Image (cartoon, rainbow, N blue to C red):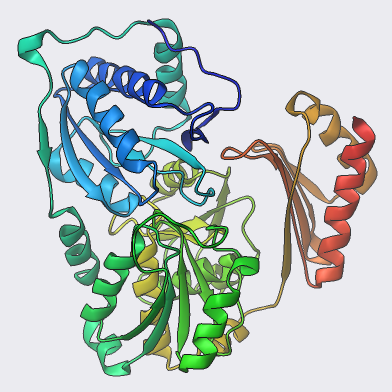
Length: 461
């Protein structure tokens, strides 16, 4: 039977996600997996699909459901276990699979889970492929395999080891330089998939590790999104241990946030800025980021005489633009760093290595590295707002705020060049909210933009 997508399910280029039990059930997950497997077999040669997950408590249950759904349409499952999401995507390419599925809701709280859907390229389904799959999912009944043609299940225990080796072999990473620096690194992996892998990475880089939340048991002790507001414990750990830097990793290890040597959160945008500086110092070239990322990334690109291109929010949107621009580095201001020399995927272990490379090579503390660049304040808020009224909301914002320029490729982004400020309003692809993001030289100015935007949207409904 075609799948009826229940209310409360978030469907976007970020995958299919929802709260466990309502609307996310094993039956629904198995049905979506079966439809994806059948669709992939229609458009690709082969039958192997890679499956991995983060550490969420609901993960084993949903992974078994996904496995059954894939087997039922004749897909051979290659199970890579509990690994970072970027490891799953690399495994798709390694095995020449027709696609992959990550059972992970990334930064969402523990009561959420999701399926991240991967193409044979080792990137997430883009807008066109997502639309094709959703059409298949909601209109067609996937053909089931006969008893003697059901898919097999094989375990790949080496996926992370291959990923680690590839990071350490990158020309942008000087392992011996980092080892000589002898950095003490504080880490908070929030009991996600990143704990064991980050510990192994740091061991290879000769760093001393002090950590919290390193056991991948899925019992998140706080909101797992690595935003500044959620990093008090890591800041305390940095201060008390005398660590050189703090690394905060989200549950599926594709995003990294930084805490400086004083214990102060640096903001997720600075992760991308410093990673770009590390890469551009060795390999200048185009940089791609999304419309919600800080202007500091543009300042870094300018310093290395590299063009900056902006894309709609969403990892695959940035990845596709990076491919088109032959970008050497890019990512998103949420702490997601993409290095095409490795793959076109946000990757927190990679980002961690690039940050340590930058600190070791420049001989700087994190605060000194940040102080090289202009200071901006960014304010991010979420509001409940009916999506059907967004067009009216955008019109109200434009009419009232009178910006220098506008971009409607992803919601509405307004820019005031002379003030060094911008505002981006867009519906979230991962939560049932509208995001308001503003940046300006002062926090007061950024907050004023967000507050004014929120007030104008309230006046629409």
